[in-house]
Image (cartoon, rainbow, N blue to C red; front, side, top):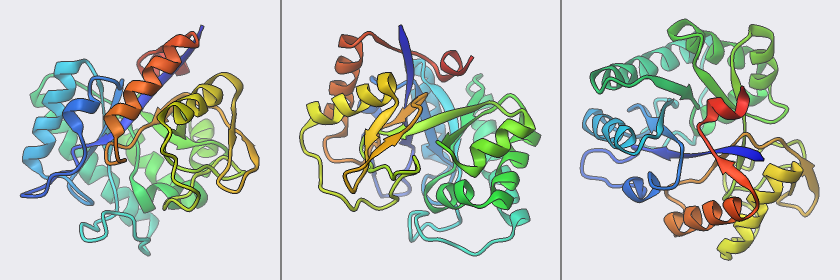
Length: 255
């Protein structure tokens, strides 16, 4: 039987601002990427999201980004490798303490937005991200795009890595993703769900410009702020089960 992990970016509300559908999405996923305060989130939201994930038996992951609250971490910043490493360490450490207070462990780390994309393409920044994660806990699983620098460097460093694809973002021919949606908006949830099934079982996906890319889907992201995200997640879960794909914690997929 095929196996896959489903992940979602969460805990991105802060102060008076509410984002995403965390409580609904927790019903369908196995991994939660929790914002750590730089691009979104705040201490109260971090604590509540950790507790919510524990309640649903969902794996907890750090979701660190650039210090860019105004741009939601989606603006590219010029930073040294050491600065990036410090950003990862700082944010992961903050989430780790909330996890420790809830008596759970951090399972994985998935950088956010522009930091994620930049690290996937820049070997020096990829090393900085991985070194920070390794120093916090060498058993932490890192989520990475197919054929990325993070994936390549993680192999060399012996760091566990899960290859990620996306249910609600366009892929490029290289297996990467388009950070900001460029292609046509997909409104057919069944079509999106079958796209996920094909990525998991066949390792293929149609790109934003109509080409076919080869990918390996060990964990699939469903963004909580995508319009209708809970309905999409529900449809994806149903489609995977109907096609003999088991939804399991990410460590079971990469082991």
